[in-house]
Length: 168
View 1 (cartoon, rainbow, N blue to C red):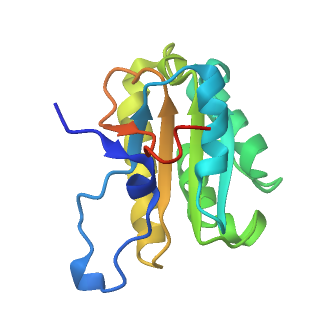
View 2 (cartoon, rainbow, N blue to C red):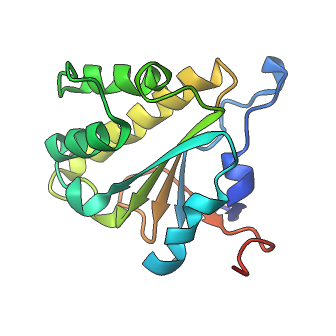
């Protein structure tokens, strides 16, 4: 099993020197904590980052996932509700949400995400990884923090709250 990574490290910006950036920087992380404690995660996201919370129980199919992300990130009215349009919107967040020093998707009840279409979880992981790679080219982190349990089939790194911030 992979050693847990502190949330602050997971959310940190890529290295300034492009040659030092690692291709294996994790994009999906799971924080195995309850709902009440997870509510505080938004306050641990670095200043200047933009975070949006989505609900796994509202994203049990790909169509529902599109709806939840579109609402949370205010996708433009012309969002085509298909995978290519979804990918494009994730790459262009700075054009219609706002420019930020980093983007964080916070997923509550993550185990329920795509549970009615589990074969689509690999696509979701790829979409998040592709979005992160696109943002990384601009020196901007894009990360996904899952609450509680990992949906089967998602490649995640286990996360921990930083010791100094856990005492809230």
